[in-house]
Image (cartoon, rainbow, N blue to C red; front, side, top):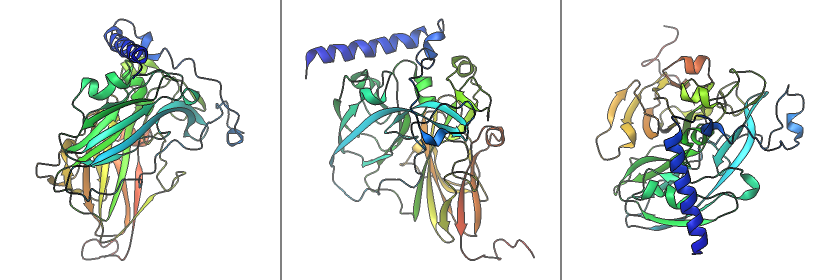
Length: 365
């Protein structure tokens, strides 16, 4: 390794740590970079939007069905993973834009899946053509300085860098950017999940979905047309403009651009609920069902809780649960802090199709 690059990375990492210590007395450092959005790219998809900045991508939302296959090996393996950061302007909802920060151009970042005892070789990069800010990655599943953040902290164009780690403890764990103004980067989309399965794996299910909840703090009001800049003061007060799944308001609903998700009567589905935060505790609840098994805080070794209507998921954790689908109809995934649903955009729908079962539910007795 080039020792001059190593020295630069250590310097940047220490600078980020110093910024954390300065936050209480110098709030401006939190929003320093966000006030200087890079010039917008021309894009025909943005024509007709009142006062909105031209978008770089049509959608920033990760596909909730894009979940890695379950572990099917019973001996430790070595994996080569790559992760790049991408900053991009996209819509929160029609006519409302912001400059997101992401891993791999999506929110949440890709879900990684492995087995306890596996070895991960990670290549991390901050390409200059897609970024204006310093980034890194902190894996909560990693023993090491900052969960790897110290040794992955780089400025645009200074990478790629590589680290290697062994997955020593099973569970669902979050990863996120942690460069000093952590709240800004996480709020704007830089978080995801690494699932470390136990030696015996997880019970088989028919479908899996992956969502990332996060708060967006901006100078505008919810639904206010135009480009929304990051607002450090609303973040300090923990008063978000939006609370979102996957970076967009109501995308995976009947009226949303992504439409509802699909499942069938008789299936069991598993939902990974990654609460990036950066601040608020979530109350995961499926309207029209319950969590027949709920793995609190991503714990895969304890017996899961049973038939949970709703629960608390702290910021910076990935929890998950299963639902048994007995009757057709929509299931609405919500945070039961319901003003976040009604006013701030947090809802997704799973459309369950199949034959009615009037012994369980009869809408017209």
